[in-house]
Length: 455
Ligand SMILES: Cc1cc2nc3c(=O)[nH]c(=O)nc-3n(C[C@H](O)[C@H](O)[C@H](O)COP(=O)(O)OP(=O)(O)OC[C@H]3O[C@@H](n4cnc5c(N)ncnc54)[C@H](O)[C@@H]3O)c2cc1C
Image (tube, rainbow, N blue to C red):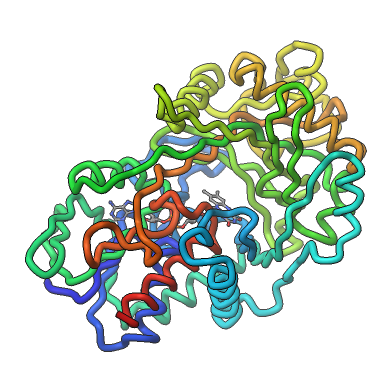
């Protein structure tokens, strides 16, 4: 069981590493270890009928398996250095963009052809935003949609399956340094390799921390983003989403001068549960296929918090807030904006009486009992600011789901090749804390392989 290269994790980072290896070094013996299922076996048991909420499966099919955390996502590949990670700090802005474009070309070749590439370049909204003290970030956005994203993954797997050895349902437990390489230890056996690419994403964050502790690889604390997912009638944002699809808008709140930003916009999409290490938070996605679209648009409003001294555990802080919402709501809580402003909890009657139908079955409640005042104030101020460019955002019936938390892995110390202090041990994708998106994670996979092959 000896390989030239072992890749741990079959998310976008791992997939694009494997893909690039088949192109640049087809003779290398490569294995991919993935704790989740093969793509065809990934099924979340929530059917909205018999099973309405998360039952904490041993392996979460939303977060794990071939395709990683992004398999059932909206498949928005943001080609930009302005957000989605700090890969450019390691490999340079031009190279980062070039690799993201390369990833886009491959996605097009494997089923994405015909999907739309949106861009903020030359958009009139930049001016309208600035006039209202809002800041629109620059990006090109390839929207694959949940359906096409899945097809691209199916096609990539069909291409890779006989060139690379896949071990599904096989979490790696330990990595040991041996003479000339690494030993990968799983319950099913031990495997060796000369080089190892770790791409375990957010679901592998605890494991990644353990590996860094055991191998004494330095890490640095990262930020956590905390907020809510906003859902409103699609018409309210349609002028923005029709032209840009996703707009990343940043607002500096007058009260605390905190930055609040929009994140993961899903026109005509659905709000969904997300399970991170047993904690239920909220997320969203949308389909390219008009038949699967809803009447609502959703997006997150997030505030970044970064703790360093003496308390360093930004993720722990985010987790505690999410646990509180899980404790009060048994999962995700939903509240009408009007109820929040009036200081009253939403109940089922108020939700049923709203002029909008929620796309997620969440527990009506009171988000002011969950979110810290400073964060909640920032979100409310941002909603009023957005109301100026998208009137209707601050309507009473706008739904707020909480909490949405974006956990970031601690940043692992790596060099410009994304190599740790150990020769041949690479740490990429969201698991490295450097990337937070499909395009950046995928690009990091291509980058390491080009570096390995050149060496
Ligand atoms: C619901 C949802 C929607 C999203 N939408 C978007 C979007 O539209 N656009 C965007 O840019 N980003 C989106 N994201 C984020 C995006 O999915 C991630 O940034 C991206 O998947 C990171 O890729 P990765 O390869 O680094 O890690 P992941 O995709 O997390 O893959 C890591 C893989 O490693 C496996 N693993 C973990 N530990 C081990 C172990 N010990 N042994 C073996 N395998 C292990 C996991 O099972 C997982 O499959 C979304 C995320 C979610 C959850």
